[in-house]
Amino acid sequence: MFALPTLPAFGISVLALLVGAIGAALGYLVSLPLYMLTGPAVIVSLASLFGLKLEIAPLLRDIAFLFIGIGIGAGVNAEAAAAMLRWPLAFVALAVMLVLAMILCRAVLVRAFGFDARSAVLASAPGHLSFVIALGEAYRVDLARVTVGQSIRVLLLTLTVPAIAALMGVDLSEGLRPQGDVLGVGYIAVLVVLSLIAGVILNRLKVPAPLLIGAMLVSSIGHLTDLSPGVLEPKITMACLVLMGTLIGSRFGGISPALLFRYAGGGVVITILTAALSLAFSVPVAMFLDMPLTHVLVAFAPGGLETMIVMGAVLGANPGFVAACHVGRLLVLSVLVPVMAARARDR
Image (cartoon, rainbow, N blue to C red; front, side):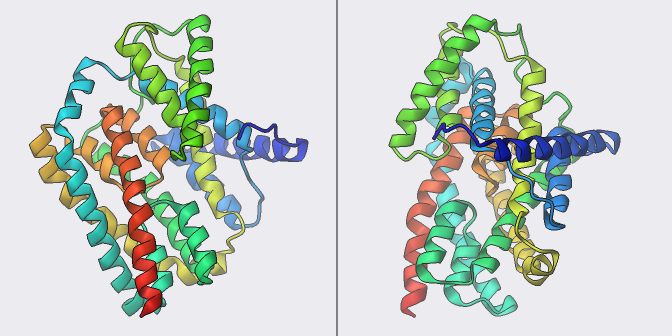
């Protein structure tokens, strides 16, 4: 889980981060919403599509997840914790939305894009990419179709959610939202050690993104109890966002432009469909919970778990609510996708 990268892998990571930093700078120059995340995602995606091998070593990824989790946890307060009592309806609405999205997207891919039933089910899954790919290998489906569709979903939602928030008047220039005194080195060291322990425990329990979730939990408890007052240095969180954007863009490594254009249509359509369903379900839930629509939307958006949790923090959303919704989404998909894939195979 925490193995040191080889020198070549580290060198590739440095190159990837350099390209990501250039993307962030260009994003800033053109006023791209949440430029420190979306800029690297766009530039690294393009570079990967045209053959440049760009990857982030697992150790660097884990370090970023660790500090992002600590930074997000700094936004938890008593008011955010009290909102937990009003979440059950949100989870029910989320589950219904996922079932509906899977059924509609599968039908569209089969009828409009010529997918076989099993490939359509796996490509329709709004998340859980590694799990979906493993199922695809077991069922021997066309993994190229599935991978392209899923990668497009993650990239498009990374770009569109900040754009929608910006159109709604949300200020995205501050990065991760919590403000206050900067945490001292001693506090950070304690949070890092406790977060690593929590991450190991969650990893053994098969919780997705264990380091991110573990660091969020530890930091949240520390801030709720005032044992770890303050926030991370903004430059650290900005660097972590650049790394996240680079990681998203590197998903397109190994996918040629010809393969992308061949299968991109289905990915774009199902992304639009799932995003529209997320918005439709977010409106009544936001009204019932008395939350800003953008906060519920980022919790329901079928993007990458880590990316959407970070996006929620940037928007100032309740971090516990956003994380719980996205972990709940993966748990529902863990049951829903195999059941639908099995039924498709039987037919």
